[in-house]
Image (cartoon, rainbow, N blue to C red; front, side, top):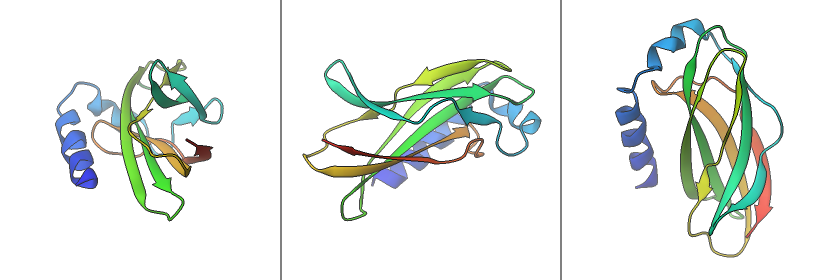
Length: 128
């Protein structure tokens, strides 16, 4: 169910402006400024992720966070939108909803609104 929702969300996002900048970004053009940091955002738990756009065009990125439990099962998927101009950096906070107490691992990466990967994947472990 969760993967289907992610596919539907990414399909809907493809219609937003900014997806055409993909042609200017061949391969990885968004880089992590620092490792993801597990933090609290009000009542929510989130990962603070900071990115810099080293491509040659403004790009709207979908920051995707996939969370796995200690058994390796996908426990949650969260996204956050971030629009970065050339050379700019920005911070996104994909939120982790409703996780039970336990040990988790998250994979965080960025795709364009058209679904093209524009960053490497960062992995971070955390405890709820």
